[in-house]
Image 1 (tube, helix red, strand yellow):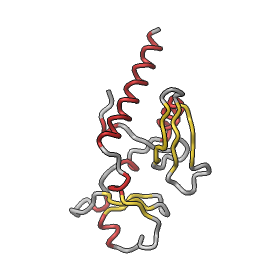
Image 2 (cartoon, one colour):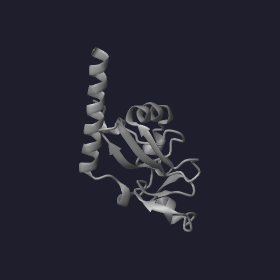
Image 3 (cartoon, rainbow, N blue to C red):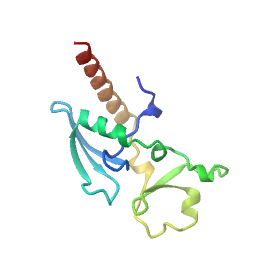
Length: 138
């Protein structure tokens, strides 16, 4: 099983972060919204298999990191916000510069999945990995 830190959720076309809108296990479909305002089709529906295949090609570890490497010596370098205008994470040090004061931002704490949501997604991933493995064995 993949470690939690190895799981990334991103757009299948532009590698930006996503908001998962729904997962239909019966139809094997995931519906998500790309958080990049420049992505040509922000709301997408894909089969779960197609999502994972395409997501893997656009996976960028940097966009999923929790800490801003440029402010490594600061104690407030953990990301606390996401700027939709710049399509980047912001730490407290970034916000102190006021460079993003008029930008459209979202506080990560408000949108961060709770433990129960992560468990559900992990169970779905585990289920489909087992299903794929069983199909390969057959």
